[in-house]
Image (cartoon, rainbow, N blue to C red; front, side, top):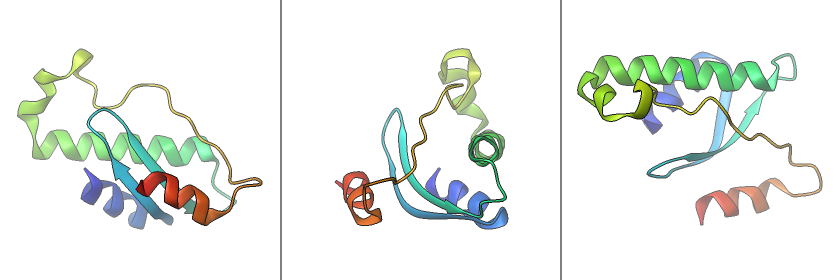
Length: 93
C-alpha cells in the first residue's frame, strides 16, 4: 500500500514526508501546493490507491467490510504550533 500511495502522491504533486502503515489505519505527513484543497488530496490518495490495490489484489476485496479499503472518514490537521520534526517523530514512533 505504501508503494501505491507514494506513486499516487508523486503523480499528483503531493509529497509524503513521513508514513506509517498500521494494520487498520495509516499516518501520513504530507506536503502539497496551496492551490490544492486538503479534501481533494485525501480523495485522490484514497480513491486511486483503493482502485490500484484491488486491481493488484482482487482477492482482498471480499475480506473487507462493505468491500471498501478505506473508511469514509479521515482526520487532517495542519502543523500549526508543532514543528514538522515533532509530527514526523510521532508518526515514526
